[in-house]
Length: 117
Image (cartoon, one colour):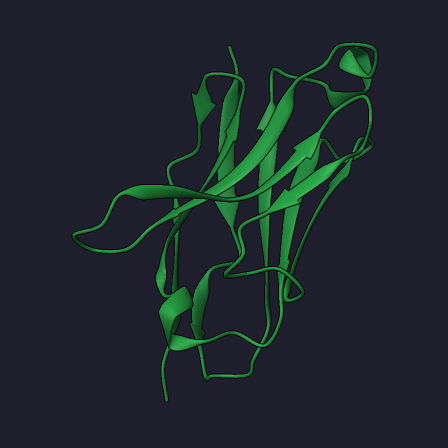
């Protein structure tokens, strides 16, 4: 059974940084390096839809970023640790949301990020 567990959220002032982690169990990244799938980070602010923030494609390593985070966020994966990361720099109040990772049809439980002075 696949389980995704996010961590790393918290409270940070504008301009600060956080690194989110998504630990995957039951889904060894290294076993699927020849199969094409996406590893995503989404976020959802109160009263808003859940939006795609960043995507990493398994076989090509191609990345996608929403315009609102381009140049500030970096998505990466560590096959040995079976973990997906989202490095978030220069955080803004509008980045405040619950952040979720998704791999195939599996979702994590979310981790809260609050950016405020």
